[in-house]
Length: 229
Image 1 (cartoon, one colour):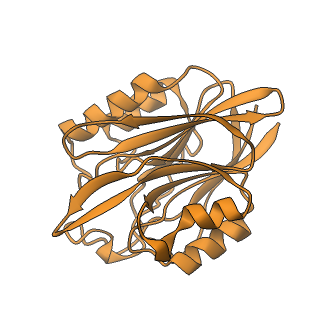
Image 2: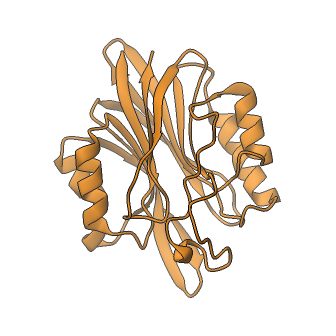
């Protein structure tokens, strides 16, 4: 079976119309998004994509950014039925989460995780490593797809650990961030020159045609691949 998968941090400040247009044209079968907002009627991606025929699993987490509290989180959207959902809260401090969707595709069940770890300005972080360990503890050994914004570079401890057990769909580590300097006032990025977004699979799944795609809708670029299992 061959399906197209896509992951994208759509950014709480992202352009909703451009995000929606891109996702419609992408024609992906399974989409993992991060920073999907739970309580903004003007940016209701869940309503939009379920209206396009997608099934959904979603876990919002309240977090403080500056003086504002955001209620957003990772989500999985699938053109195939989601038969089971699980939410995982990865740390008490600097709360972040992952969501798991078990997707029925013909006679197979694919375990899909969408994750979003804390941003550390590309520095070592005990909290991020705790979040990564907790995520890994929930991952299954086969028929598993892990996608998301790990906010971690290829040299980080969490990515090195994931690569020991799972297959990185992009071993070349093409940069995915940041399209806009305001993606992080602390980092003040001036170009897309850092990789933070990943697609991982268990060894029984083959990933091909990995792409970092072009969009101005978010500070992150979308990543996609075709998987066969």
